[in-house]
Amino acid sequence: MKISASIYSDKKRPLEEVIKDLTEHQVDMLHVDCNDDLSVFEDIKKIRQLCDLPIDLHIITEDPEKYYPFLEENPVEYVTFQYENLKKELNLPSTIKGKKGIAIITPTPIDIFEQYKDFDFILIMATIPGQSGGKFDTINFRKIRKFRRKYPNKSIHVDGGVNAEVSFILRSMGVTSSVSGSYLFNATSIGNALMNLTKRTIDSHYQVKDFMIPLEESPVVALTDMNMEKILQSIEDGGMGFTLVVDDEDQLKGLISMADIRRGLLRNIDDFNGIDPKKLLNENPVAVNEDATVFEMLQRIKKAPFPITYLPIVDDAGKAKGIVTFVNLIKGEL
Image 1 (cartoon, one colour):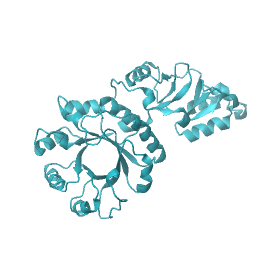
Image 2: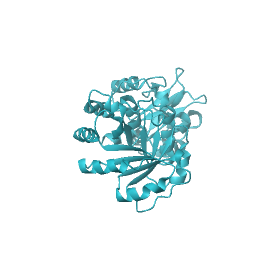
Image 3: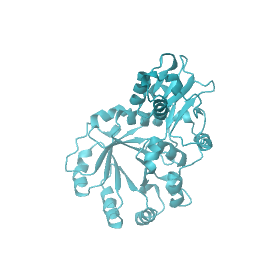
Image 4: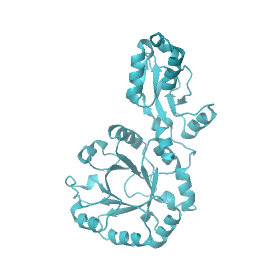
């Protein structure tokens, strides 16, 4: 996940000094907020003279058309318009280069992206816009998950409340970029803050249920009527390489992965039709309680004698509640 540093969050130093500091610490992008102020392009010109880092411009305005000539003259790598301030649907001319995005605040549903399906990304504002140092609203985990499922080929950017623990969760959910402002500049050093935002293990007070994929969105088959076709179809539809197996009351009975199927095929190499689906079942998978924190989840994974790429999530009674997968986190670390 790329870190986009919000340059105006540092109120104490001149722009030149802030850009120099961010460049030396090899931040990924420079986030430039524009609250309907065309003078922002003077700062963009200065930035271009100071470094070659990608510029991530977020424009809040009722009149986007007046920005078009400036964007043509001063192209940026990323340009985002705030959805709630628009009086009519955006119609950006093709002469404006760079990746294009639409930003929404927490109460706005991600469904508005239907109007902007030709855009490259969505920017989810996870705190109150303009509120520096605000707390990440956990409802946005669900929005991110929904957007990822509905638009798998689009990027997700997040702005607001991103600290070390939130950053880890966002990376595991496949978020492309997160904006960091007060967290970067209020730390003992920018370098230390960047390390916290990208390190692999963190302490956390967020619970697994805040960001897990819920059971209704997970690959699941019922133990009572399980057969090879249903198992394979569930794994195929889920796209994660496994399926949960539950009873009629959603009690977790285990899981079946493609590795389990492969071993079953090898055991029955001369009689594929003789495979008993129930003998493929891993009845004791590593699982985590829905109330566990990220730190507790990671401790559980570290104790496992084999690599973990997905986890069933259960409640205190052992009922399946969902899953957490680390596929996106692994991709993001490559």
